[in-house]
Length: 133
Image (cartoon, rainbow, N blue to C red; front, side, top):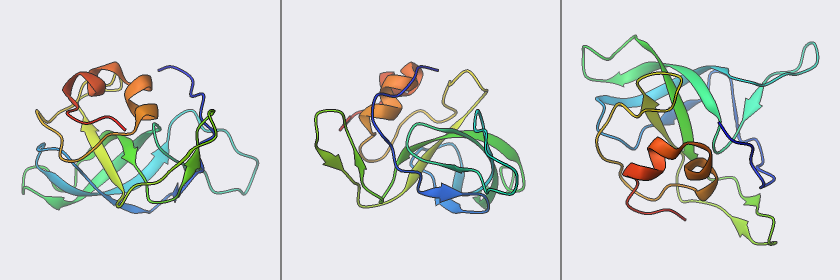
């Protein structure tokens, strides 16, 4: 997992429900925790585009429901700033379900664009992405 150059605004916190944009069988995830996030005592951990999360599947195939999976956030509605000064925001929020912590996606295709920050940080996701913005 590489470092991000963009100043990504943290748009999600624990218990947030986020839809998926792949064909892994999960339709909606509920965020349980964020990886590599250190906060001060009492502060709720938050995350944004490119972050690795642990989530439970709320909606989807019966065999996928109630499972705890790893996922990466690939789109967010809240705008964030890139180093060249432009601001980026998407029409919806989305995540991609992973097989393991290394970043290999469980699905075989993604619907919609993927943020450049998430694609740079997770090379297996960028190989399968059709549109990178």
